[in-house]
Image (cartoon, rainbow, N blue to C red; front, side, top):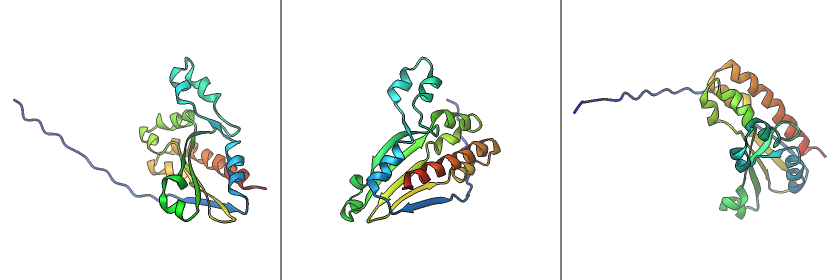
Length: 166
């Protein structure tokens, strides 16, 4: 019996991530409608069965080239929000083709894709909060990934502005 040892290496790095929050006096339900209508919907079953994965995913995108990957009703899942009459919905928003572009340079990009967006309201104001993609993916310190992430900054800003506009 041979004696084999495994060396475990640890790597830590700290970097700043910017949290962006925009709000408006617009009804929560209308913000949800205006947010979702700009996006396509990811269908994992269709993607898994696709003979042309790229074309299938492309057909699922919305006007900004993004789609809803998943939705969580946070106000139903978190008792503290429900008791405070706070409405909140978390979205995973992205595009597997865009994530794939970044992951080819560093597979750890998959850790941050798809980015999350929280829409929440408690009263007259509706808020949309998200991590700025360039700072989220910027933790990988890869200029090729940064280029794509900066493009996502613009897409997310446009998405949120349109959702909150009258």
